[in-house]
Amino acid sequence: MAKNGKVFLIGAGPGDPGLVTVRARELIEQADVIVYDYLANPKLLDWSRGDAERIYVGKSSGRHSIPQDEIEELLVDRASKGMKVVRLKGGDPFVFGRGGEEVSELETDQIDYEIVPGVTAALAAAAYAGIPLSHRDYSSSITFLTGHENPEKQTLSIDFRSYGKNTGTLCIYMGIGQLARIVSELQEGGMSGDMPVAIIEWATLNRQRSIQGTLNTITDDLERSGLGAPAIVVIGEVVAHRSKTEWFEGRPLFGKRIVVTRAREQAGQLSRMLEDNGAEVIELPFIKVEPSFDQKLLTEVLAGIAVYEWVIFTSANGVKTFFDLFYRAYDDIRCLGPMRIAAVGAATAREIEKHKLKVDLVPKKANAKALAKELIENEGVESVQVLVITGNQNREELVQSLETEARAIVDTLPLYQTSKTNLTNEPAAARYRAEGADAVLFTSSSTVKSFVEQRTALTLEKSARKPVYGSIGPMTSKTLQELDLPLGFEAPQSSLDHFVVETIAHLNQQA
Image (cartoon, rainbow, N blue to C red):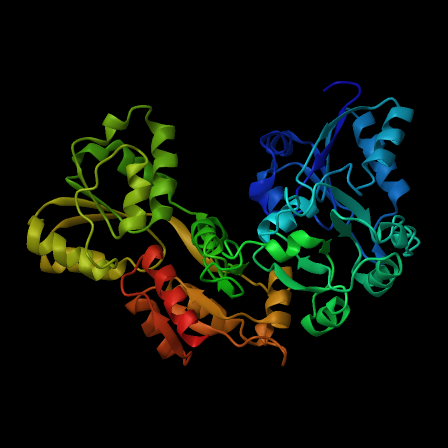
């Protein structure tokens, strides 16, 4: 490692991780240390190395966990030790982000640095609210202002009266706390009370909210709406010409908060599908999936892998773990032999197909009973050697059917275990208790059981939203009913696509 490291001042953008630059992601992935603040989306840390040091220096209005001079000392200290230091700052580091102060300190201490711009909040807020900041007929200038220049002082240091004659667009950062005074000074400076105003809270995130009014009404509008920081105030004629189509806030699940209960490793796809439809997702992984296998059994199975005529995968987890272990033993996919392959459902099949393997059988209903029935009735597996790749749960019915009804010769290879997690002290659980949700989605019986066991620790506050419970399929629904949880809706087919479509239909029907 070099004697002196380097600091990268990176704009973390307005909130949506998809708006971060390619360069920013590359550096996050390489960083030894990541110093991040309140407005940097924590999901960006998912890109970092497992051994990277993560330091939260979160600052919000009226609260500073680490003073600015200590943040600067921290950057210098880590870089002086030869580390690659990423400083993640909400928006753009040089737009009201105190990036200039940090650069001055780095130059004083002769620390190498690089600046990676980010999408600043005003640009993103306007775009996601459908407001054109410039317009050839209404605004040929854009002015960025701050409601308070010095976060320590919490005071208004700009004379907004001087902007009262402005004919362009004003974008005001950190102005919510001083809005009444800002409005008053603009009007004292000559701005009409009919001037359109918009306020956008949590821009680009699926909890974004916005309101529109005029200088005369906006203070009361804000109070009624309950909007708060972080928010951008946009003032100008362009606000009245915002797009009629709500491309962001008009998505089918926008404004809905949904809990995803899948294991952390599996939650990503369902969460993305919900978020793409506008939902605000809380991930509460009530189960965790970890590799777990008998080394002697694994060695025996892999040594004789080519003797099996069928290999059956009961989950995507089993597929991932199996091929991780298979490639450690063999470097040629042909070592699998001429076996045929069955998958319990479409998601499992897709995981297999990543290895350029054809899946010969996927039952119409994604469950072990349907898989066994189709194998027995359509494939003739009597006296056939079958390998079932599975976990520590839900394999008995499949194996028993194949052995007793079809008289197949079945070997099982458990490769992972599913266990319950304790979410009592998780920040996501605290948020669920405080805010609730519109729906809790269960993708397996094990997530239902774990949820019920932790129900006391997840008791909702009185003001929290009361959710409906959604199930991915009949087996999960059966468990919900057995444990006295009211079933709100069930996917018509046991797939994530159908689950999301049914969630949209049910929640929109309830609205």
